Length: 272
Image (cartoon, rainbow, N blue to C red; front, side, top):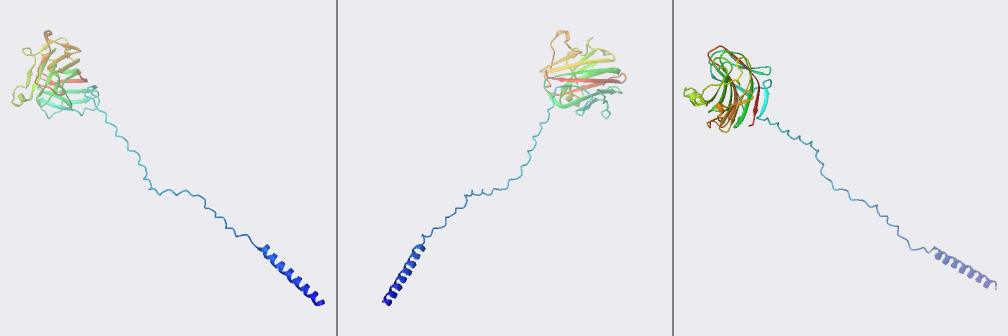
């Protein structure tokens, strides 16, 4: 009896132990493993493509300033730059200087007789042009005071007035001809056919001021004395078609009587 009881007790103990073992396994049964969440890297923007290093910007080159154009038409005194003017001696000693700049004046000093001294501005060539000069006779024997237009290798047209000497108060119109000069002939061709010297009270004789002008336009050459156009006997202006274009010039000449001193004070060159 005791053996049987002991047997049952052992069986009960064994069964209890088995249940505990089984229960332990059931409680220890684990959930299927979960994968660790994948952490996406933070979105990234693509890096910009490498670019060439920009060359340093050069400062813009300054635009060329246009050279101021000098007009062929002007009014001037003679106090500025006179490098455009050249002395031309058509009679007398060409090695001497007869013209100089003093203050605002262009002074002609011709101490010897039979000397024809001019200055020419070769900067511009004109077809039609009006030139006018204010001129003062300082002291003088017999003289001539001149303007020219259309100067070239052929010659020029010349208006010449006289303020001293036997011809004082007269003027003349010439065409100077270089070909005649080369042929050793008188190069001054009279444009006032059959008249020569024209007397007029519009020229102030002796020392003092005169304003003289000449217009070369087309085939005509017109004379202006102290603001008044001078027409001979109210006839049409002088016509000549030999010269068509050229430079302008100023001149002073002496004849047989004593030295000549004449100042040019101003000059106007205008488009007709």
